[in-house]
Image (cartoon, rainbow, N blue to C red):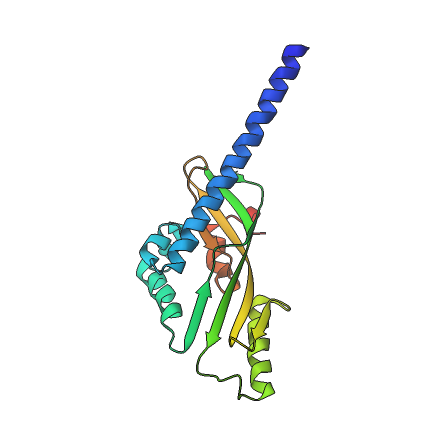
Length: 191
């Protein structure tokens, strides 16, 4: 009896430690991806992108899209590392490990071409409404003093691993890409 209890305790400890290390690997890799984006090291960031997306869009197209966001004239972005992770259950499908997670990040955005100190109330309301449509009600606040919109970005992300959960590649679930993501990520994971 004592041996059985000891074995059960060891097994439970091993399972718990493994689950924690998988989660640590997921967080480590997603934070590395985000850090490269913040530093505008897009080639390195793309190393953490699920390579199957490049069957639909070239790596260069992805890189150009990332560069374009940061090069938009009159737009200033201040990104931060993710604030929180909610990591779902790992599913192994066709020898690939998948995990769906919810990632919350904060960032600030300034639209330099609009002087909100002198703009009418309708202009501010229009921009706030447009941003809230993208990020959700209550996730956008305008700071009149700094002229930055403070945004809470709540993203669903799918991670995949081909090497027994040691390293992870990611795809953000963008509603505009659902049809393509459905060709890459199994529906059991997307839903």
